[in-house]
Length: 193
Image 1 (cartoon, rainbow, N blue to C red):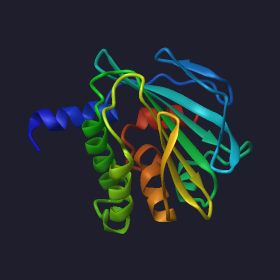
Image 2 (cartoon, rainbow, N blue to C red):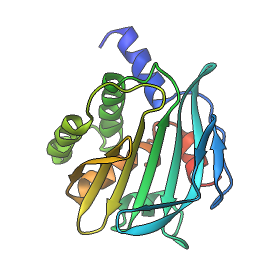
Image 3 (cartoon, rainbow, N blue to C red):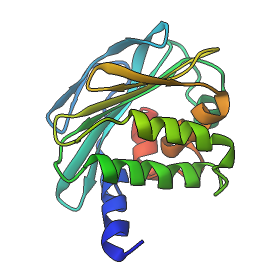
Image 4 (cartoon, rainbow, N blue to C red):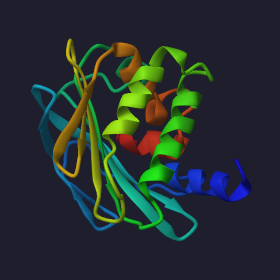
């Protein structure tokens, strides 16, 4: 990976500043309205927190974390539990392309699995195949875990895949919530801090 690719990857996953939103209230983050509730994964989930990913002065994406009302908010529990959870990504920069997002997600999987992605390799391939075409400002992604079913992947409001397995859910949500998240500040914002 050359330095431009590494920089692009960092831009996608957002090494930079984050602004947080109040728990369980609709929020406007980076000009994107983050809804208070999300009906997905067989449940109505409530916004726990939201943040804007920035790199220098560039706004990349707004993210929102959704949980069942009254859920524990400890990151380790959220990653490991077999309970509904969802995260939304609203792209606000044309710098976040499909290929850069996939590269960033793959790097995030490596970090959240301690470098051993083999248990989730099939799910990662399924996610790549489901990502669809071009991605730019205005594109959206939703990842919603439904216990006993799998992680539903939505692209621009359309379900494009359901990826089975609790291991895949743990690795995916670990990108933002594990002990080695993409950015500690985003993790804090998503948890409502």
